[in-house]
Length: 475
Image (cartoon, rainbow, N blue to C red; front, side, top):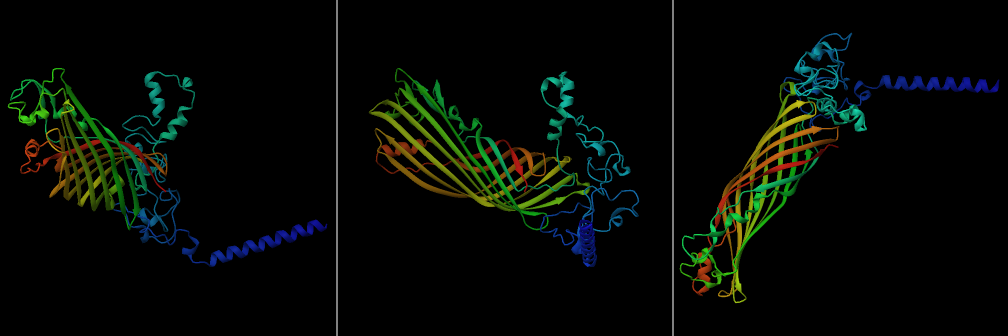
C-alpha cells in the first residue's frame, strides 16, 4: 500500500512538470521555438536558384522535404509553405533526379522521361540515358558473370558507389587534394648540337637539342586547394599546383674522337678545340613548375539547377625553372662544360570563371577559363668551364609583361556529404618564357680574354598540360 502511494505521487508530479514545460514553450515566440528561425543564410553561402524567392521571404523554420505536395495541403507554390527553407526541387517542374522530397515515386509533380531519372538513372525511378542505376549488375549481365562468384552483394557495392546529393546542391568544397601528372613544351626547337665528322652543314647529326626533351614525359606533382565562405555565394580560394620536376639526358660517343660541335660550326674551321674531336658529347635538361593562386569566387545558380556558374578575380604567381647543361670530353686536358640556369617568376592579376553541368544529383561536369596579365622577371646564370676558358659565370635579369591563361575540364562524383571524387584536365599557356640555351657567341668571346658578349635569351611559348585524380572534402 505504501509503495502504491509513492507511485501515484510520482506520476502526478511528472504530469505537472510536463504541463509546465509545454506552457513555457507555448509562451515563447515562434522564432525561438524554431531552431532555424534566425538562420543566417548569407553567412552560409546560400544561393537561391534563378526564379525562386530567397528563404528570408518566408517566416518560420525549415519545411520538411516533400511537404510542398503532400496530400491535404491548401494552395500551391510558395503559398503552400507556412515558412522556412523550401525543400530542394520543390519548384523543379519535373527536374528532380529522384529521392528529393517533392519527387517521390508516384508523385504527380515528377513528370516523366529524362526528368525522372536524369541521364544515368535515379535510385527508385526509371532508367537514364546511360543505362540502369544498378551499374555492377548491368556489368555482370553484359559479360555473363555469375554474381555468386564475386563473393559480395553487388547491390550493396553499387549502392555505396551511387552519387549522393541534390540536383540543386550548390557546387562547394572546403579542401581538395589531387595528384597531377603534367608534361610541357620545350623551347629552342630541335637545333643540331653534335655531328660525326666535320662539315658545315653537318652530314651526320648524332645529337640534337630535341633528343633531351624533358617535357615529353609526364611528371607527378600535386594540387591543393582550400575555400572559405565569404558572403552570399562567395568564397576566398587559395590554390597551389606544382612540384612537377622533369629531366632528360642524351649522349653521343665516338671511339675515333670524331665528334664536332655547333659552337665551332662543326669543325669548319676549328676555332675552339675543346669542343671538337671529342670522344663524347652530352646535353641534359631539367625543368620545374610551381603555381600559387589567391582568388575571390562568386557562384550563381541557373534556372531549374541544371547549370551553375561562377566568376573570379585574384592574384596569380607562376614559377618555371629550366636548366640546360652541355658537355664535351676528349681527355683531362680537352674538355668543355656549360650550364644555363633560367628562372621565370611570373606575378600578376587574373580573372576568369567556370560553368558546371549537373548531369545527375551528385555528378557534375565543369569547364573553367582563367586569364592573367603578369610581369615576368627572368633571372639567369650562365656558367662556362673549359680547358681554354677559366670558370666564368654571367648573371643577369630581364623583365617584361606577358599573358598567361589556363583551361580546366573537370569532373566530380559525390559519394556522400563529405567526400567527392575529382578528376580534371589542365592546360596552362604562357608567352615569352625563358629557356636554357648555349650561346656560342658568348662562349667564343670568353676564350680570347676580350670583351664578353652577354648571352641572348631563348624566349618561347610554354604550354603545360596533363591530368589529375583526387578528392574533395566538405566539413
